[in-house]
Length: 397
Image (cartoon, rainbow, N blue to C red):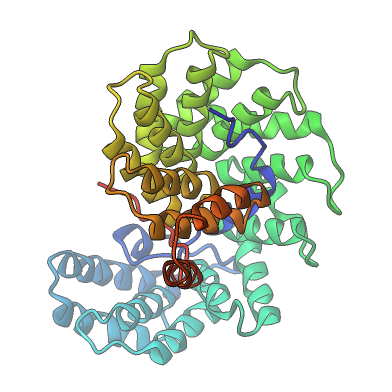
């Protein structure tokens, strides 16, 4: 079995990280959050009013938790109309979610903007998110405002923007210094990749390891890959296995795949096909195409399990449907020889033709199949191949 995936995923980690951000949600912690907006003067009247509003909003939160949205709305709206940022933000969320009121994105943005202008940091973050792709300059303004109030997510995003070449300040350093684990990882990646950021493997290792030690699964996987490939550290398969395992046990599909590969090859761990099978299966169940392909190989060859062509076909098909070249080729061969499926030259040609479109070495097998097919069958197979669209598989439960 080939090492399908042995290269580092660090370059792609930036994109993965950015996908983990969602808008601040309406929860009790959001409602009762202390507004970080700084004021040079203490206003006792304003302070008393805010305390009163907070008490009312606590009551509204209890109603929200009981899904009594209309009753909660009666409390929240009057406070929001008085310009209290927390209530404005909650009202924005109710419009966004359609809680006790008709969904209205425009109204949601309107109230979010009011809360943001009144200094509510979560509203500033959400408004920045709303402007992404619509008005990036405006988005940057609001990320900066939230970052200045100490919002680690905004600091992190600004830093990641700088990392990929945008004119953003290095705010993720500030977030990292505050102890934000995502920013520890981002800072490590920043020192690792070669960009406008000064490359420094020693610092990369420091920050990635810091995030990994705090339980960040992607950092653990990355650290495992660094030890696996001997990048920025001396190659050490035992350490690679250690960090892959930590991440794999948290459900990271790439770590599960890489750990399985180490068990298969006996690198850093005692060779054990059954344990390799266990981790391939976990990764495959999450939709990892490489793991699905390798699981198919295990079933076909009977490695650590009873040989079963039908199950091999099942896993090859899942992987092939995602566009995996080797899986497409192996599935085509199963149709050609009639192993695990009924013999079918049209389907064999289709899958091997798709594999050949990614790897010219596979064209010979396709051409040999054509010698046993009619012109009509070849045309049908070619049509099926041309209509094929790879589909990312969802995680199975």
